Length: 189
Image (tube, rainbow, N blue to C red):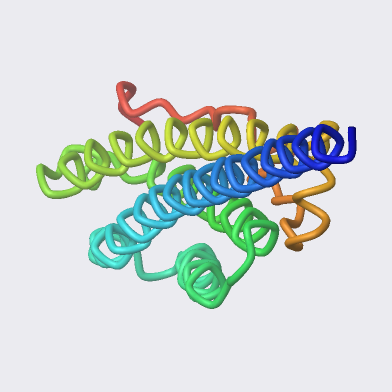
């Protein structure tokens, strides 16, 4: 009878160990998926930030008295470059988006600028980057949801707490940022 109890205890301990190892490995994979998707958001933010100096130079070439809009874009870009966490990057991204919107409104007042091929090419690149950034944010947030669900659900939450798997932050945007700026490149002023 004692041998049977030892065998049952051994099997139970083995199953618990196997469950613990597979849970841990699953959490590691989910955490790495979040990190991967975050790096994709970061890549698109960098791509957009790299386009901005050229856009600013194009606008500068046509305007001499719109320095405030140009400076706000430059400062917001620097803020984004220094952001570390998803929350900080989201806030800096929001600031940059607002500054870019204001710069594009300024550009509306310069028909020659809007007709410039370099400016149009930059705007096309910026639009494509914005689309890729939107997809990257969505993919990142999807992986964060999967990961956060895994670390909260019983019994994996026990393994998650034991090995310090912490909740991940979403890349959130404000309601104001979700609104598309009203810019009309088709009309002549």
